[in-house]
Length: 105
Image (cartoon, rainbow, N blue to C red; front, side, top):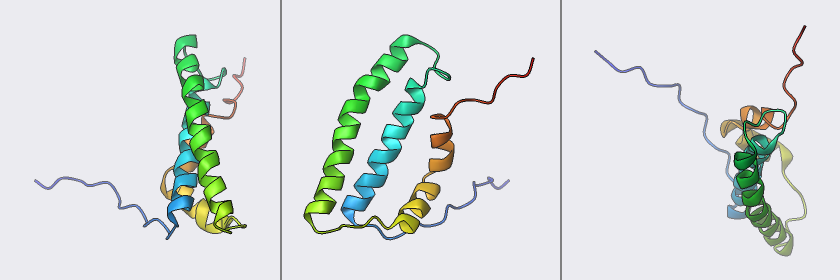
């Protein structure tokens, strides 16, 4: 009996270390914002903990962007970064930041 493996993900595009840090930091911040979202949250304590952690993640994201800027990387290669975000499930993760669909009465 063979195991059914999940489909293989496409490879990540080539990123600089700083670009990888930006993508990772952005997704970590998105995950935390999704936990904080009052329209989707479950309890105040979990939202509070996520808000506290967001400060550190935002600082790391700022530092990655500052490093890129200091190195003379003045442009974000949006198509490449968007591809990386999609490979890392960024669309699903970002959905939690938005409002859920309105309930029909």
